[in-house]
Length: 254
Image 1: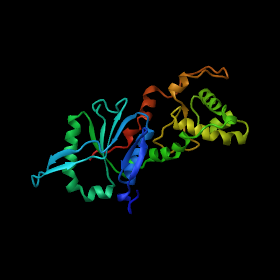
Image 2: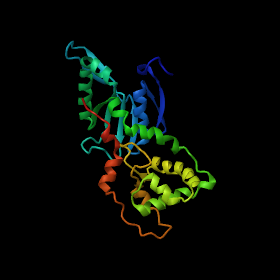
Image 3: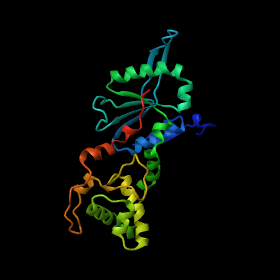
Image 4: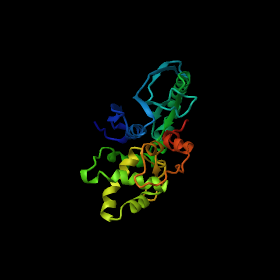
């Protein structure tokens, strides 16, 4: 069901195979992001209702955050309980801050008591290059390989392993002499990126000149069909872990 404004948009989106309701386009975009990130293992909409006392009136109130998410491995060792998130457009957040502040204070205390972290996300933290990359890559996850293209995947990975690090443009040029085959192989390359089998920094805009490499786990399962000596990947483990933990780049605590 779609409302009459961006604030009233309602619907459901599949997150890790479970439908979760959203109440704004911005909340939907966050759920799409969490569904794509493999380390976001448990995602729950409106996870808890937190009672609190209004310090001004003494009245008892209740507050329900928008989303909770647990990561495996945790993105912050101090917060194994994950994140409890409120999603707000920036203008709404600042316009209603006096009313919202007591709710957020109660949520912060609740999160701390449960080894979690409370955070507020706005369009500035959600609609980043990461989100736009995810929207581009998601359709490739459901693509099935045509029988005549079954060798493209192996060719792309073998070529990229030989280079250790390249770009989509260079990988296609090096792997396929025929321009038609390069064009046919491009969707396979984007599917491998979407699956995380080819690594890249998705927090930066994704283009044909973006650095890419074979993910460490993928490289370990392959033998080189062209007898190249498998050299260590240029990216160290710490750098790959930083790039994989995309959520580190999109939260802001007020």
